[in-house]
Length: 165
Image (tube, rainbow, N blue to C red; front, side):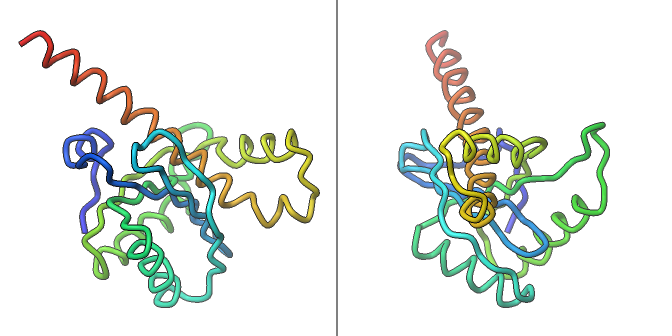
Protein backbone atom coordinates (compact mmCIF):
# COMPACT_ATOMS: atom_id res chain seq x y z
CA UNK A 1 0.00 0.00 0.00
CA UNK A 2 1.12 3.46 -0.81
CA UNK A 3 0.27 6.92 0.40
CA UNK A 4 -0.25 9.18 -2.59
CA UNK A 5 -0.89 12.85 -3.20
CA UNK A 6 -4.12 13.77 -4.97
CA UNK A 7 -2.05 14.61 -8.07
CA UNK A 8 -0.41 11.16 -8.05
CA UNK A 9 -3.84 9.57 -7.65
CA UNK A 10 -5.12 11.54 -10.66
CA UNK A 11 -2.29 10.13 -12.77
CA UNK A 12 -2.86 6.57 -11.53
CA UNK A 13 -6.64 6.20 -11.75
CA UNK A 14 -8.21 4.42 -14.68
CA UNK A 15 -11.63 5.38 -16.08
CA UNK A 16 -14.61 4.05 -14.14
CA UNK A 17 -12.71 3.31 -10.92
CA UNK A 18 -14.51 4.35 -7.75
CA UNK A 19 -12.81 5.73 -4.66
CA UNK A 20 -13.91 5.69 -1.03
CA UNK A 21 -13.85 8.42 1.58
CA UNK A 22 -13.10 7.73 5.24
CA UNK A 23 -13.75 9.81 8.34
CA UNK A 24 -11.73 8.08 11.05
CA UNK A 25 -13.09 8.65 14.52
CA UNK A 26 -12.22 7.11 17.87
CA UNK A 27 -15.50 5.15 18.00
CA UNK A 28 -16.56 4.93 14.36
CA UNK A 29 -15.30 5.08 10.78
CA UNK A 30 -17.58 6.98 8.43
CA UNK A 31 -17.63 5.70 4.84
CA UNK A 32 -18.58 7.30 1.54
CA UNK A 33 -18.24 6.10 -2.06
CA UNK A 34 -17.86 7.87 -5.36
CA UNK A 35 -19.81 6.92 -8.44
CA UNK A 36 -17.84 5.33 -11.29
CA UNK A 37 -17.56 8.71 -13.01
CA UNK A 38 -16.05 10.15 -9.81
CA UNK A 39 -18.43 13.11 -9.75
CA UNK A 40 -20.50 12.48 -6.62
CA UNK A 41 -19.76 11.25 -3.11
CA UNK A 42 -22.51 9.27 -1.41
CA UNK A 43 -22.54 8.53 2.32
CA UNK A 44 -22.51 4.84 3.16
CA UNK A 45 -22.51 2.87 6.36
CA UNK A 46 -20.63 3.63 9.56
CA UNK A 47 -18.23 1.04 10.95
CA UNK A 48 -18.36 0.76 14.72
CA UNK A 49 -14.73 0.50 15.81
CA UNK A 50 -13.75 -2.49 17.90
CA UNK A 51 -10.02 -3.04 17.53
CA UNK A 52 -7.71 -2.43 14.61
CA UNK A 53 -7.64 -5.99 13.24
CA UNK A 54 -11.43 -6.24 13.11
CA UNK A 55 -11.82 -2.68 11.82
CA UNK A 56 -9.35 -3.43 9.01
CA UNK A 57 -11.18 -6.64 8.06
CA UNK A 58 -14.53 -4.83 7.82
CA UNK A 59 -12.97 -1.97 5.83
CA UNK A 60 -11.21 -4.32 3.41
CA UNK A 61 -14.37 -6.40 2.92
CA UNK A 62 -16.18 -3.17 2.03
CA UNK A 63 -13.35 -2.25 -0.36
CA UNK A 64 -13.49 -5.65 -2.07
CA UNK A 65 -17.28 -5.55 -2.42
CA UNK A 66 -17.23 -2.02 -3.86
CA UNK A 67 -14.05 -2.43 -5.98
CA UNK A 68 -12.38 0.52 -4.26
CA UNK A 69 -9.38 1.85 -6.21
CA UNK A 70 -8.21 4.23 -3.45
CA UNK A 71 -9.15 5.59 -0.03
CA UNK A 72 -9.31 9.32 0.68
CA UNK A 73 -8.94 9.65 4.44
CA UNK A 74 -9.64 12.83 6.35
CA UNK A 75 -6.64 14.32 8.12
CA UNK A 76 -8.00 16.22 11.14
CA UNK A 77 -5.62 19.19 11.19
CA UNK A 78 -6.07 21.88 13.82
CA UNK A 79 -7.58 25.14 12.61
CA UNK A 80 -4.13 26.81 12.81
CA UNK A 81 -2.72 24.12 10.48
CA UNK A 82 -0.80 22.24 13.15
CA UNK A 83 -1.02 18.49 13.60
CA UNK A 84 -2.40 17.19 16.88
CA UNK A 85 -2.92 13.73 18.37
CA UNK A 86 -5.79 12.87 15.98
CA UNK A 87 -3.49 13.47 12.98
CA UNK A 88 -0.91 11.14 14.52
CA UNK A 89 -3.61 8.50 15.13
CA UNK A 90 -4.81 8.78 11.51
CA UNK A 91 -1.28 8.43 10.14
CA UNK A 92 -0.70 5.40 12.41
CA UNK A 93 -3.94 3.82 11.15
CA UNK A 94 -2.79 4.24 7.54
CA UNK A 95 0.67 2.83 8.36
CA UNK A 96 -0.99 -0.21 9.93
CA UNK A 97 -3.29 -0.62 6.93
CA UNK A 98 -0.23 -0.63 4.64
CA UNK A 99 0.60 -4.09 5.99
CA UNK A 100 -2.85 -5.39 4.99
CA UNK A 101 -3.60 -3.89 1.56
CA UNK A 102 -2.13 -2.45 -1.63
CA UNK A 103 -5.00 0.03 -1.98
CA UNK A 104 -3.48 3.52 -1.86
CA UNK A 105 -4.48 6.12 0.73
CA UNK A 106 -4.67 9.85 0.11
CA UNK A 107 -4.67 12.21 3.09
CA UNK A 108 -7.20 15.03 2.75
CA UNK A 109 -7.46 18.06 5.04
CA UNK A 110 -10.82 17.61 6.70
CA UNK A 111 -11.07 20.85 8.66
CA UNK A 112 -14.72 21.79 9.05
CA UNK A 113 -16.04 18.66 7.27
CA UNK A 114 -17.97 17.59 10.37
CA UNK A 115 -19.34 21.12 10.77
CA UNK A 116 -20.46 21.11 7.12
CA UNK A 117 -22.00 17.65 7.52
CA UNK A 118 -23.86 18.75 10.66
CA UNK A 119 -25.23 21.81 8.85
CA UNK A 120 -26.37 19.73 5.89
CA UNK A 121 -28.16 17.26 8.16
CA UNK A 122 -29.79 20.14 10.07
CA UNK A 123 -30.98 21.69 6.80
CA UNK A 124 -32.53 18.33 5.89
CA UNK A 125 -34.35 18.44 9.24
CA UNK A 126 -32.77 15.18 10.41
CA UNK A 127 -33.54 14.47 14.08
CA UNK A 128 -30.76 14.68 16.68
CA UNK A 129 -30.72 10.88 17.14
CA UNK A 130 -30.47 10.23 13.38
CA UNK A 131 -27.81 12.97 13.02
CA UNK A 132 -25.54 11.22 15.51
CA UNK A 133 -25.89 7.98 13.49
CA UNK A 134 -25.19 9.66 10.15
CA UNK A 135 -22.67 12.40 10.97
CA UNK A 136 -19.54 10.31 10.35
CA UNK A 137 -20.63 9.01 6.94
CA UNK A 138 -21.82 12.52 6.01
CA UNK A 139 -18.41 13.89 7.01
CA UNK A 140 -16.73 11.14 4.94
CA UNK A 141 -18.89 12.24 2.03
CA UNK A 142 -17.73 15.88 2.40
CA UNK A 143 -14.10 14.72 2.57
CA UNK A 144 -14.51 12.57 -0.54
CA UNK A 145 -16.41 15.27 -2.45
CA UNK A 146 -13.56 17.72 -1.86
CA UNK A 147 -11.11 15.19 -3.31
CA UNK A 148 -13.42 14.42 -6.25
CA UNK A 149 -13.71 18.14 -7.04
CA UNK A 150 -9.92 18.43 -6.98
CA UNK A 151 -9.55 15.38 -9.24
CA UNK A 152 -12.01 16.97 -11.66
CA UNK A 153 -9.98 20.20 -11.71
CA UNK A 154 -6.75 18.24 -12.27
CA UNK A 155 -8.41 16.40 -15.17
CA UNK A 156 -9.53 19.66 -16.78
CA UNK A 157 -6.05 21.15 -16.38
CA UNK A 158 -4.48 18.04 -17.97
CA UNK A 159 -6.97 18.16 -20.85
CA UNK A 160 -6.16 21.82 -21.50
CA UNK A 161 -2.43 21.01 -21.42
CA UNK A 162 -2.81 18.22 -23.97
CA UNK A 163 -4.86 20.51 -26.23
CA UNK A 164 -1.83 22.82 -26.44
CA UNK A 165 0.35 20.01 -27.86
